[in-house]
Length: 252
Image 1 (cartoon, helix red, strand yellow):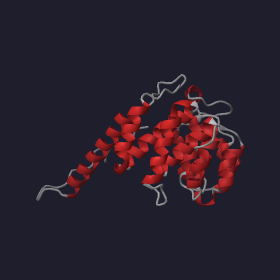
Image 2 (cartoon, one colour; image 1 turned 135 degrees about the vertical axis):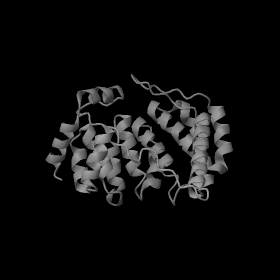
Image 3 (tube, one colour; image 1 turned 90 degrees about the vertical axis):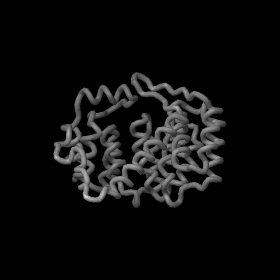
Image 4 (cartoon, helix red, strand yellow; image 1 turned 180 degrees about the vertical axis):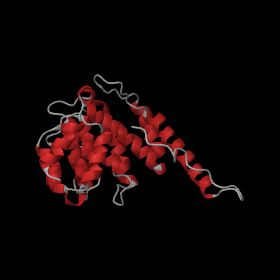
């Protein structure tokens, strides 16, 4: 797909209401107001197109940049490109999108080291999101390195910039949720940290309590495991149930 065609499609999918919603979440500048559901459909239509991703990012349009992070090729995404794109960050929506792309690249570990130490609010936020998203990678930090990260979060979180603070809290939750070996240390650190105050602007968003959220994640995973075991071992002579919603149309 050529750049102009992609922009026409984005423009056609945008709405004034979505632009208002994005504005409340800190998005400023040029934006079509495309929903994430429609961005996902366009991502599927385009597939991986690294050259188009680079061209979309250069437009400066919010929706084009989010789409760029979705269709960029992680194998071709260099540290130099991610550093260049990170320099353009100015809201958490694009920051989260860029961090998710970065977490899928070979340079993710190096970016975590560099970005989490940045005094810039958005680059710092991206760094902690990359760390959280990278915990399932083969080259994820070991427990010793993550323990040092926990100490860093505890020491810096309350003095960190607003959205960096929020992402540090998410990293704390991610470590506690994914590493049972460190969960005790995470919960102890969360108790010492206490409430994490984040200004969410004109939205109803809230900052999750780390200990409570970790408990919810663990409970959800345990319920899912029990469901999977039950599905894998049906009672003799009882046919398995049809998945709910199998014959229903997807809701818009």
